[in-house]
Image (cartoon, rainbow, N blue to C red; front, side, top):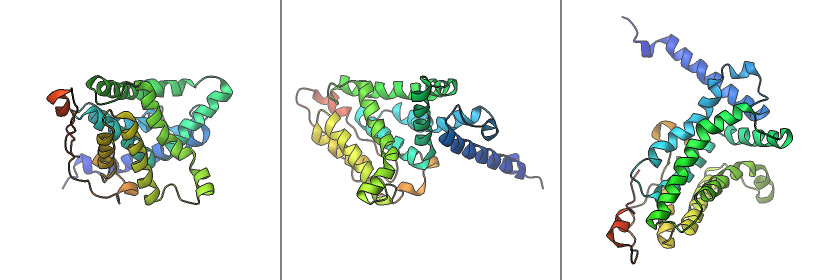
Length: 255
């Protein structure tokens, strides 16, 4: 009896080999930077782009969905953190490259390609979600790119400051308790600072913080699997002077 192609040992071995190569390449990038990584560790140029494509693919469907801008931005912040948690070498890669830029004066050609291929499209869609929230009245009148940089910066700094946190606070930043605490606090901060209806923003942030995960099911890992179950749907907020159309945009989607 023949073995289906998708189930063949050769196919499985090839996928395992590819995964091993990619994992090794990511470790090399994190340790040496994009331009400094050894060619033998990379195997091919596609490995680097494959390493960064997962985050964009994780947030794109959600950002293009019919969710309200507020829910999109809060989920974006959580997905970004969870993805970094599942791929701890990614923040190190970014910091390694930024350190190299400080010494060399400009980003490497490889990193420019990564930024234009993966970071820039995600940034444009994220900024659009912020602007949609401003235009609809859901968000305060803020500057979209700055908001996005701030919420992503909170997550990236969490990883870069982890050694200091261990020393001055005596806690493990990556324990389930610390992870849940960061998710809850960062989303609460966004909800309180960004939303026109501050009370609603805080409630929505709490709802999204208590999801078991914001990542697509195929990318979920054990790191945040112990979070509490999702809370009941929130009531739609009332906004004097904005009418029923504004309330309709506030529907909170279940995961």
